[in-house]
Length: 145
Image 1 (spheres, rainbow, N blue to C red):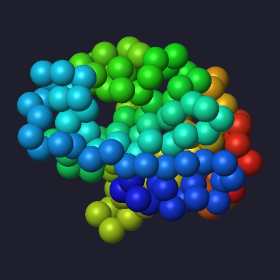
Image 2 (image 1 turned 60 degrees about the horizontal axis):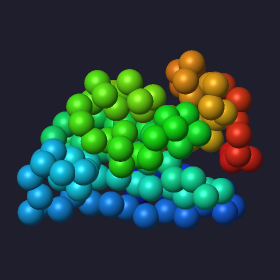
Image 3 (image 1 turned 180 degrees about the horizontal axis):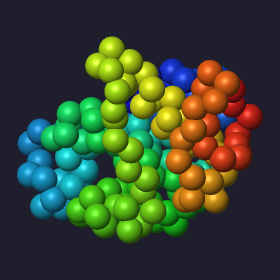
């Protein structure tokens, strides 16, 4: 699923991507690194800030957390440390993957991209809306199509 998000955002100039995979030798939540062993994370760097899309392997690919540096005001590593309730309290956006098996991850990736490219206010207050053949969330901050 993270690869789908990356491929949809590849055309936005100035973005850098890296995928952080869990280290199976770490015990979950023992340390900051251990807490991150609970997630597969796509890190998106833009304008000196790091945003993250995290998928919990324990929930399959059906539970996604999106952390935006301009919204959470905390580094994504700190937001993803601790409970899922704490992540939401630190302004991470939780996204459930629903729909037909064949299309649900494609739809989820499109919703994630919509959350990543909208403005900070829309990220905090709006939900994805399907209109005109694509998902969008409020007002865009990057010039992506």
